Image 1 (cartoon, rainbow, N blue to C red):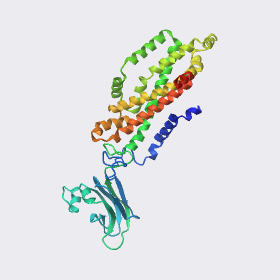
Image 2 (image 1 turned 120 degrees about the horizontal axis):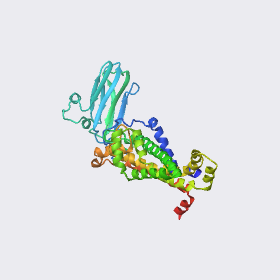
Image 3 (image 1 turned 90 degrees about the vertical axis):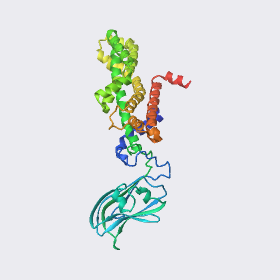
Image 4 (image 1 turned 180 degrees about the horizontal axis):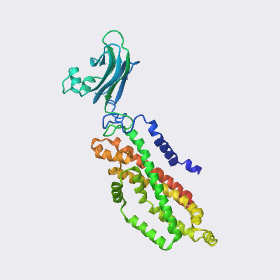
Length: 398
C-alpha cells in the first residue's frame, strides 16, 4: 500500500483532486467572467502587445503612474461612482500631451464611458472615426492618470474610479472567444472530468459486479441470458447511442454519468463472471454449500472479497474511457453548455475558429489535461494489476 502512495500517478492525482476542490475559492476570477478581449494571448507571448490592466483611483490614491512600453491597446473603458469636495477633472498625461478625459463636479459623480462613444471622441476633439486607444497611447513612455482639481486645493474624494485598458495579452493561458480566462476554465474543467470519469466507472463497475457474480455463480439459463445480453450491448456502436440518449434524456451532468455507466459495465461483468466460475467449484465453496450456507452469504462473504482487487484495477483502467467519452460528447456539442469541461472547451475552440486564428492556447490545455488524466489512471490500473498478479509484474520487467 505504501508503494501506491509513493507512486507518481497517485501523488499527481491527489494534487489534481485537491486543486479541483479548492478551485472555487482560490481562483482570482470566475471562469464565466469576461476579463479581457477575445483571443488574448498569454502574458508570456508577444511582449510588444499591451496586457489588459485595470487602474484604480480611490480616496487615498488620486494619482497612478503607468509605465507603457507597448503598442496601443485595443479598447479603453472609464467608470466610477465618487463624491468630490471641489470641481476636478480626470486627466491622462502622456509623455508629450495632457488629455482631460472627464469633468467632475462637486458632490456625487457617476459615469460609465466607453472609448468608442462618439461624445467621448468629440470631447477630446478627435474625429468620429478616430481610434481613441491609439490616439491616447500613441507613444511609449511614462503616463500619469490622476484626479486634477480645478483650483489649488486638493480634492477630497470618496469612492473609486476604474480605468480599464484592454490589450492583447492576459494571464497564464490567455482568453477564449468570449474573453474568459482559459486558466480558470481549465481548472474548473478538472472537476467535471473527475466526477464523470470516476462516477460513471464506479456505477458501471457495480453493475458489472452484480451481473458477473449472478451469472457466474448461478450458471445455466441465467448465465446464458445475461451473457447474451452482454454480447448484444457490446455489438452496439456506443457513440451514436450516447448521442441519441444525451439528446433525449437531457444534457445534464448526471444524465451523462448514467448514460455512460449503462453502456460500460459489460467488460467488468465478463471479468467477474470468469473469476466467479473459477471459484464456484472450489472445495471451500462446495463445503459451504454442503453445510447449507445461503447463496447470498457465499456471494457476500467469500466471492465478493475475492473479486474486489480485480474490481479496483478495472475501475482505474475504466476511468480513462469515461473521460474520453465525456470529452467526445462535449466536443460534439451534446453536453450542457453551462457546464465547463475540457471537452466543451475543445468544442468551443473548434466552433469559434481557434484553428484559423492560431489560438493554440485554447486547444492545448484541455487536450493535454485529458491526456494526462487518462495516463494517471492507466498507470494506477497497471500498478493494481501488478499487485493482484505478481507474475504479471515479473513478465513486464522481463
